[in-house]
Length: 286
Image 1 (spheres, rainbow, N blue to C red):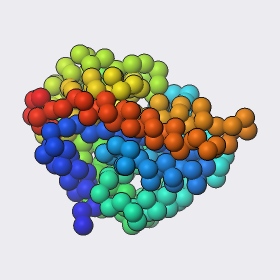
Image 2 (image 1 turned 90 degrees about the vertical axis):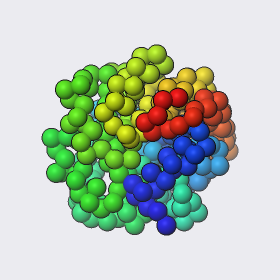
Image 3 (image 1 turned 180 degrees about the horizontal axis):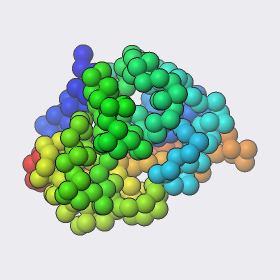
């Protein structure tokens, strides 16, 4: 059985064989509560998610906009912890051994957990990779290199301000895929422009064979289609946290519509990505 970054590589190989880009969903672990979060997580692959980014709730999420910040606060209020996030992943992994799960968030909870203990627990839970927003390449010895040694992927962020002088450092120890942030700013604050993104993806592709996945500013099936046509995958996050928020009752609790709201949106966005059929994924031009 493949695990860790090998599972990520296997998923992109499958997508390449099918001639399509990845649809990557970001959901906040524990939002709006543990039980509902587990149901959402379990339903995502069947609704069209190729890769799942699972947010780690944190009290000071500097890169996140109001919607994802609010999702994290709801999760923390409902009792989510990093250990419980790993338990959610382990529960998911008992029924799905193929869909990659990437933990996305900030280093503080992992540091508090202990890097070695965390990596052991993450591997046992079926986590395949990490996206750490606040650890630059200069800090690779802190978490990146131990993560790679444990067999997990370490996905780095490239942004519109990552110039050709900085890009090699960003790519040096990146594995799994490269996450390109479509605009400078926090999540949910702008929209991805396909022409601008396409040029950036082409520039990054000149320096790596890794798949390039684009996130930030993708909310609609049409936007997902446009970005998937120029990249190896499209990430949607804020739209999902908005869907959760809009389904809650007056007390901020889950309703009978919460899980369906997220999974119905997943199907719509997955259809948009699927409409952007590509001949190859991960280094070849469409």
